Image 1 (spheres, helix red, strand yellow):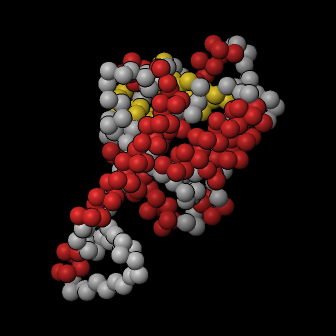
Image 2: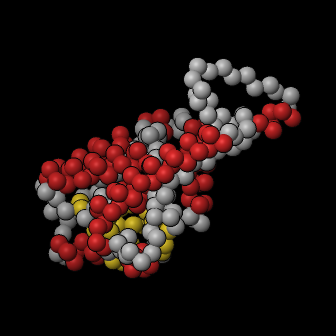
Length: 244
C-alpha cells in the first residue's frame, strides 16, 4: 500500500534510499522495479514516480517494471514511470482513477445519545464531517477535487505511455484488466517475469543486486502492533477492491 506513513508501506521517504542505492551503486546496466501494490496515496505515488524518472535521467539508466499480483491505481502510476512494463498473465493492471471513501456516523451517535458539537472559523472547514449529514455543496466540491486529481493521473499516464495506449477503449474510468488484456490495451508492453526477461536483455551471466525497504526497529520488535493492525485492515480493503 502507498501512504505517507512509512510503517510497512510504500512512501517517498521509505523508497528514496532504496532507489538511490539501486541507481547509484556500481553503475548498473539497468534498474528493475518489482511492483506489487493495490495503490494508495496519489501524492506519494507521484513523488516516487518523479524520483524514479529523475534518477533514471541523471544516471542514464534504463528502467524496467515487472508487475506481480497488481499494479493498480498508484501502483500503476509508479509502474508507468519505467521505460517499459511487463506483467504476468494473471496480474491486475490499471485502475486509473481516484477514490474517496468514508463513513456516515451521524445516525450512530444519535442512537447512543451523543451530541456532536463543532465550531469553526471558515464556512467549509468542517466539510465531509462523518458525524454530520452530507451537504450537497461539500459533495460537489469533493467531486471537483477528485476530477482534477484524476486529470493529473491521466496526464501522467499519457505522458509516459504515449502512442502505446489503445485509443479505442476508455482506459481511465477506473477499471482494471488482467495481464494479456493490459498488453493489448497498451497499459503494459509484454507478458514476462523479471529474471528470464533481464537475462534475455542483458545476457545469461547478468548479476542481480536486490534492494528493498528496511523495517523499523519498533516494527521488528513488534512494538507497533495496534498501528500495524489498523494499517493491515486498510490495506486489506484496498486489495479487496481488486478481488484479491
